[in-house]
Image (tube, rainbow, N blue to C red; front, top):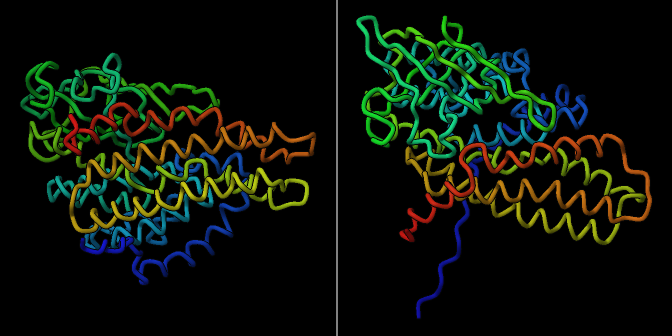
Length: 385
């Protein structure tokens, strides 16, 4: 019997790890002054001036080519940057989607004119994007979209509706998955992606207030919106292939592990005090760390595949599904810990942060693909269905 080879974990290259300290130094001066219950919103938080400051420092579009205003760095450099932003709870929602997936999508599939127009603006923190995928009455069945773009002499006429569109009310553009031919029952055939300027006549955006009191989800309506011919990204009818590649960027990053991390850190600070330390809390901290560590290693392995130009769709779905589970366990476990103690004085900021994360945590297993959809993808990828 041959010896089992030792597992080789993906390591962040030293030149990319070196980015961590300057990012931390900057965030200590900025994000750390913000209360924890505000920082807990992190990548759903809207702060355009903060995004522009990151752009001035070259920290948006870090992996995009330098000829388009990007940093020309590796996917690992962006991983380090994003990990620090999330750990500090920086309010990065303004540019988040543009940096994470819209920019890379345009780079991969867009025309040269699209690259030269959009990418420098993204890198400066001046062009914010949202994702137009989900629709009413379609549930998680993304292939059944009904929003339609019809060809005209000038370009396209767009009609339909999108829902659960994060930060649409604060975005300049949407990359929308729409039907350009066929009918909903045709499934993956006839789908295309279009860039929609959200300031155009016929576009209406309505924010949706969630349980936490935030309004970052939106409904977006299109009523005979006239789009130019160059709104199309990539090839007509290839939208399904493009959108599945895009979702690998959305599902694999540190944000699929760290949505509850500000709460966890606030709780740890309390546990480290004489009043907050108990044997049960120390065991719980260890249990959460032992869940986060292997997930981070998996996320880094997906990052390595992205750095090699691969499209790890199944692996990204696996990281997102498992990561979501841990993100949802954290507020539930902390609640059990705090409310199972004898009467003690718990910091108000910790309770406010717990309140927010508890309200928003159910959405973690919806955004980026529901748990059932992800597990179906994983099963198919493993040849189990």
